[in-house]
Structures are given as structure tokens and as C-alpha cells.
Length: 225
Length: 262
Image (cartoon, rainbow over all chains, first blue to last red):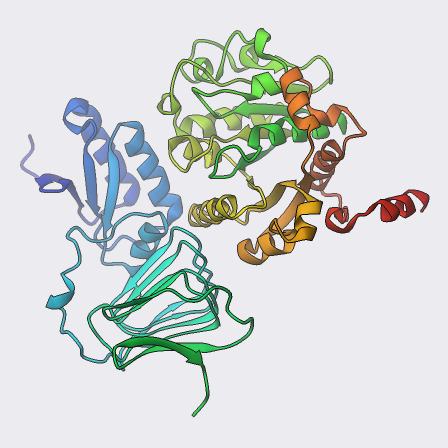
């Protein structure tokens, strides 16, 4: 073994293997990793791997092939950790986790503080079945939320489109969160701790807003002012 | 020749992927195109049966990938059309015997040899699906006009977007105009309303599909059948023709009579 620290560090964690990439060219990093795996194939066989790529900006063209190469060797890549938001977005698109530990239990987050300011998450496409969006603040979706998609937000959720999936607003206990949509027929709706199932067909083209009134989840036509 | 690779997939099983691949292939080949079909459903192969080529299999996809034969040796030529070939799947292996990069290599080699490579994807969104879309230039997503199939199609379209294989093209299969009229089946509009993708074909329900599958003679060989015609239309649209959609939902007896007179 050379004394020089490797650009690819591998260690065991509770969730499986944790691989950290140093600052280097992506091509070199991946070939080094694959090389190390091929040296000890039995050690890596059927491992679950989390990969810390540091600040590397990665798109589907880089991440998907690596995932496939690893899967050919019996390794399942389940998480990508990165300081780049582009890389995180790519990983999420490919259905990979972007953090190791489960998000903190709801009670630990500063409960019940209304989220009225700060950055909102802006999503400019339709959320299809199987997509899950989690965000601690407010979320605005410019597109539809299809059945089978989930939006989980610490604050309010506004859908500039048709809402037909599941929305959980005010996950941290913020009872002032609201959920609004241009066409309002969610499969299921939750605000803070309350759950509601919407009545069958929503009237087309009616803007509606749901909020908690005295602990009851109420959806009503939206009126300005 | 540089072939276009088109994969037919659906998420849900039993919506008619294999039938579609066989018939679109026949449609393209009867337009004089050189077509190679690949059965991606390793372990549960069917395309060979539907094309009626089961008894001619010597080598398969896994044999090519593992180097037991040359590409050419595994290509079974359909004698009914001059330029239709099948690369069958292995029946005694599973999906993990082929990898996405194997499929890319295989298709790259094939591209020089033909005009179209049609890949029949297995149901599901796991390894077999990934193998089947890895080399695709375009993906045809198939659904039936029922809620569960549409839900799965929506999921698959989302995955294709994430893998940057989009935008998907949609085929709606097994539409029953009489049921739509009664309000007992989702209409084409209902499906498009949710999926919001480009429509490339509407195939009406047709009993003859089952007969044709059992015989190993794809329906598209028979020019009279409506479903066969729909598959021919898909083939022509793939080749860039701008064909209007036959309004299957509102086509009553009299309208058909009139359409015939025009």
C-alpha cells in the first residue's frame, strides 16, 4: 500500500458501504473505484453503497452509467451525497437518496412555527406517479401533481395545475399551512396532523384552498382579499 | 444504414407490448424497412411465439452477450418478409445475465445492419426495464384505457424523463369504443389528459389478436383487421408520415359507410 491517501475512500457504516471521492476528475475517480472493486469482488458482492461525490456537478449522463456499472457487479447504489444542488437533483430524479440518516422525527423540528418566509421550492414540471418531493419550507408546483405522486412540505403547498396526488403540508406541525390548486382533487390531503380524503370529482377549473379551521380540514373556493 | 432503436414498454404487464412489437415490426418490414426485433424479456420470452419463430431458435441474446455466438448467428430471419429478423431472449436464464451496457454495445453493432431495432421490454421497472431502455433512441409507452395501467404508464414516463430518454410516445391499446360511449371505459382524451405525452397510436380491441398470437402470425399480415391496420399506421408514423387518427370512438355504422364512399 502506498502512503499517499487514495482519492477514493471506502469505509463501512451501519447502512452498508460509504465511499468518499476526493477532489479529482470524474473519469479517474470512477475508474479507481471500479478498479478497487474488481480487486476484491467477493468483498463488494451484494453490498449497498452510498457515495459522497463532494462538489462534483453530475448529471444523468454521469450518474446513471455508474449506477449501472455498479449494479453489474452486484452492488446497489442507494444514496448520493453531494454539496452540489445539481447533483442532488440528478440523484433524486434517479430515485437515489441524498442523505444517509432518516430525516429527524417531526417533533424535533421547531414545531408549529409558521413558515412565512425564506426560500420556497419551485418545481417547474408535472410530478408523475412515484415521485416524492420533500422540502422543509413552502412548495410551489408549476404543473400537475398526478395520482401516485407525493408532496411533503414543512409549510404550504400551492399547485398551479391539477392536484390529484397526495399532499402533506405543515409536516412539522404548522397548523397555518394551506394547500391550494387550480383543480383540487387530491387522493389524500394532510395538514399538520389532520388527514382528509377529498370528495369524488372536483369541479373543473375551480380554484380551491384547503386549511385547518378549529382542527378540521376544510377546502373552500378561493376568494381574493 | 444507421438504425433507430425503439423500445416498447409499459410498467404494467399484459397490456400488449409483445403483440405491439411483433405487429409494428411487420408494419415496418412491409414498408421495405430492415427490422431487427430483440426480446428483452429474458426468462419469460414470448416474442418468438407470437412471431411464430419458436422452433427456429438456436442461439439467443445471452449467447451473443456471453460470446458463444456471433450476432448474425442469433438473428432469425422471418421468411414471410424479406427484411424481418428476431433476436430471441434466453428462456433458462434471468434478467441479470444481460446488463444495460451489454445492450448498448449490442445495439451499436446492430445499427450498421438495419433501419430499425425494436426492443420488447419486460413488465416492471427493474433490471429488465433498464436493459431495454439503455440503448433506446425513442421509447413507446403502451397502456390500456384503464386506471391501473395508466397509473403505471405515468410512473414509467416519469422514469424515462429522469433517465433523459423522453419524451415518450404513447400507444393506447385495446380500446373498446362501445364501452367508452357508455362511459364505462376511459376515453383517449381521459388518458391523454393525465399522461400529457405525444400519442402515436390507438389500437382497438380485436379478438383476432388472440387467434393470431396462437397461430404465430401477427395480425398486421392481415390487411383487413382493424387492429392490424392500427399497427401499420403506427409503423408509418414512426417513419415520419403524418397520418390522422381514425376516430374509433365515434365511428358508427353509417359513418363508416360514408367514410368508405369518400
